[in-house]
Length: 380
Image (cartoon, rainbow, N blue to C red):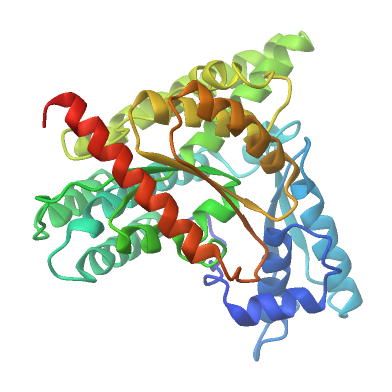
């Protein structure tokens, strides 16, 4: 839409993992290993244009190795002889406004539309698929309208009509909601919880065990990094920057309100995303807000889930993830505070644990018991 030919790399697979392991030492985060594998797989594929290609990788500051990924990828590409292939980065903190300003307002508007629309499509998918009468129909509808949304974005068009169409399509899918299912809330590291291969298709495995899954949308992270930039501007007395961030936040919230309207009355769980300050306030019961990143969001989301009476919570993180390890420790106290709500802590590194399925089945049994107790308390 902005005049640049762009391609989303496919979901990683075992080849990505094998290649990634070949070029990493084993000390890196699991997402770094997979993204390295994806990049190397692409540059070594037949027909790759070294002079006309670049890779996009986000970056960040804070207590996480994520900000080092693009630097590591640069080293790997140089070692392989691809020094002429650029790594394009978009900083989400200090230089965010300057970076996105160079892309133009149309880019920002279309990107935010796309994020919001796909977030709602994924909500609908996870709320419909466990109950569908024709297995695979929900996935087919989702894929069809995802492609339609991409086509509309490429043409620079508004996605409200696509949102209405996808809503109607999901409502037409035959479902059977006669048997209640425990609702499982997911928290944890953004890449692992969003990438099905990285988490070994956990949502689908939960659905096969009789559950329904709710996962925080990507909107959560975009809202949070904007909140952090506003806090930085206040601390640095950068009032011009603060005003710019505030205007950006107001516009984004208005757009979020508009994009949510077609799904009102259709989305059953967490129809609207909570503002970052509210999630942080909930999480600050367990962690000081100055500890930035996914940890405070995970704890805030866990509190929100408990208040909305989910039947179990899973924290999914890369192996040796520092923010994830902090959350795992804090969940011990959280579980005591919320009447022993079932908690499962899962770390992913590409190696399949022999007892993982057993642990998941035991957790789902506890979640079923929690749901039944909750329903009895309500008189159902």
